[in-house]
Image (cartoon, rainbow, N blue to C red; front, side, top):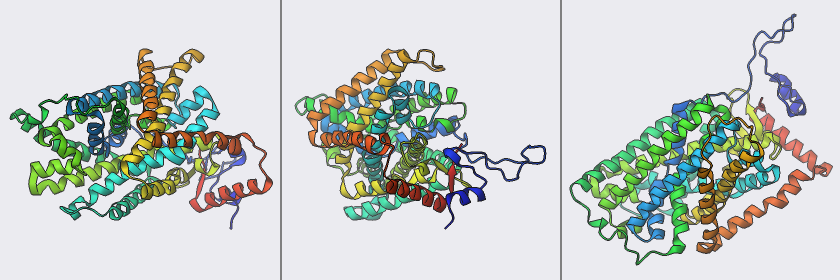
Length: 500
């Protein structure tokens, strides 16, 4: 088998010291000038429209079709659940605006990981990366993928119950196809994301329009005693908050691909503001539409809220609704993989993951290894967990670290006051967001101590992992040889080289 040096010679690459030199199709002429140069890089292909599509496409996924049940159950009544939807939308906007400032002053991809690295250093950043890799991201992907599997099979099994193993097999196929698409082409990935965003907006309109029509006709009986507090418990509010914030999660994904955004100073803030306005209005209206047609008891008993709504409103035509919902979930899966792979790409570039993860396919210009790194753990969590336990399990860690990222924004205001900030938010916005995140995180230790405790313990395992894999650089020779062989073999098999 060819060695790494032989492989890079054939592709025109110089990977000495991990640095990339331009890949030239023709050698330099006698005057030392390059006749034609083709660089292996991730191009700036994310425009404003594609940025909006990424945010809306990843935010509006299975969350709006999963979360209503969790929010109603934990908030105690219809009125409080609607307040929770509005509150989560406002809070998400505050967090999104904070991330817009970070994305315009730190123009590196990687999202949460990059911002923690810049503010608090490599140790905390690695712990966040470790939690992402082994728990948060696989669980999040498993949740949205299970929703895809549930809804894509609904038309085939109506009115029977779908066997759980069928849902998980359909889910595994969906995850595999998303990984394959993201490894093949950035352009087609973003084009598909735009198409699926249009599909999911049509699905939401298909619920909002008939629901509002029924409301204007005077169908308001389900809103009687909307704020009845007999079933309300304070301990359930953090879990309701997690369900709501999960539905809104996605506003931060554009920050994961900042290096691929065209004119990020303008595109990032605009895309975030447009997307959050559309999503918040859509979510509140779709929940009002649900409650107009479905009672609280029916919603809690429904395995698929959108399907129950469609059966009541459209009769035989209801078969189309789960198809649109499945496309919506697929769009969220696609956008998540596109964004998350860039985090692992940047982390590898910083030396926190194997070097092969920061390499790019020589023809397709995609971070092939970084795309597939989540695949094994996602499939594992897919077959061992259910949606709601996975949701609580990963939400604790997700919002703990997001709160830490925005705390880093406040910290950077004082430690690096001269850092260019083309977009700057008032200080009370990140302060309020941080306080809310940390309050809900600590309250959840009381509400669901088992799942949040497991999440906290997994995060702490990042501390010894950092010292074992990163801090102590004097590894045994046999281990270093094994790591070098692993990187070299994958580089040759995947046909990838270090990016610029």
